[in-house]
Length: 278
Ligand code: C2E
Ligand code: CA
Ligand code: CA
Ligand code: CA
Image (cartoon, rainbow, N blue to C red; front, side, top):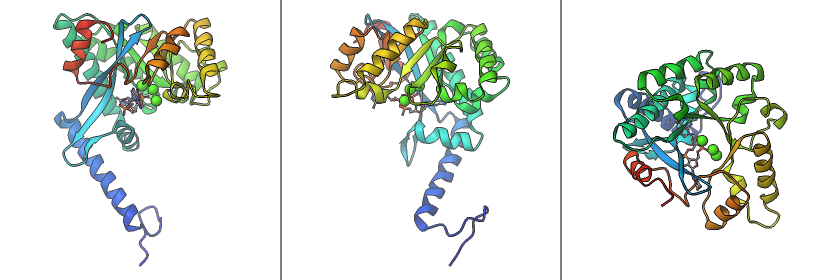
């Protein structure tokens, strides 16, 4: 029996049907969670080359009663398609800023907090204004906030992105390029943007010590970034060997399971109190 969906697409198979149902259930659960405090942020430390704690990256977590911990890699696309991303992104930004203030109020040292920003959030005309409002509302010093954007988000509408990034820089927040090396943007474009940091994508770090691996690429990225006055973060550092190579090549900041997975705020506070790499 042929069924037609509302887009005129024919015959959902039972398997596809259940995927769509699960997706719709997840979307409903997300909408509910947004209003009822059902989301959480975890924090992953970034350590400077000398071992000192440099920043925390805030990462979205969604503990679902039935589906378990749902990955943000799954949540974000659903949020983007349903327009929920703007409200969810606002929640993430506000919660990260509030958490940083809670640490400060508990007498812990100040630390940079990095927040992931999705394409649709960044595309808002008033995004910089929105960030300014959250900073004002939470009281967080702009220099303690970093925004992580992917290359593709930055170069999509180059002229508009440039203006947007310049507005953000004027506020005093810093800008990091996430997943660097995986996009199609040319360096030609990136060097004209007000960028503070490049985060080398995990895939390059993983293949670092393989024969014919990514060492030459990673070395070039570091050298180029430094010549352009940018700082380099390696993400997904999992082995002591990767750490040693990256330090030797003067990569500024390291992040990955070798140091810590993303953890709850209370655990992150312990890293903050210690200050150095555990
Ligand atoms: P990302 O921004 O590239 O974040 C890094 C991801 O790698 C995180 O996954 C982190 O838990 C994981 N990771 C960190 N160290 C290691 C390591 O040593 N090995 C391995 N294998 N993985 C490591 P997570 O938390 O599942 O997030 C996945 C993606 O979802 C993020 O990738 C980011 O693109 C997106 N995301 C997460 N939170 C948010 C958010 O609040 N807003 C937006 N727009 N996107 C978010
Ligand atoms: Ca990120
Ligand atoms: Ca990344
Ligand atoms: Ca990545």
